Amino acid sequence: MLSKFLVLSDPSPGKEAEYNEWYEHQHLRDVLGLPGFVSAQRFRFASKINDTPHWSYCVIYTIDSDNPEAVVEALTKTVADGRMHVSAALDSHVYAALYRPAGEEQRATK
Image (cartoon, rainbow, N blue to C red; front, side, top):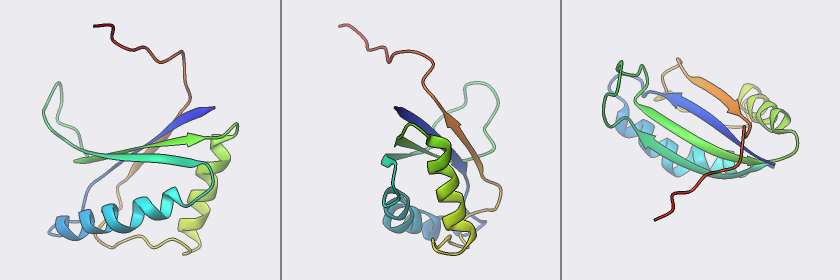
């Protein structure tokens, strides 16, 4: 089953270049090296719809597992025990949430 893991974050003040370098060239590769993670795509805040978001960056990971909670737990443990480097350029206020499909993916018909 495919699930989505959403992570919202910001760089530490004055460290945006270092944050982007770490995210693009190390962190995504590290996360995708863990069992269950199959893809990742980063996004940057583009425009306001309602309220301005707290976070400037978003990553959407795809997890392929019957137990995506265990996949996320393994990531959390890997970070917590220091086996995965987390840059000081990452602001500590991070939001993360796991989403399971609530229906079939719909595609535009053109």
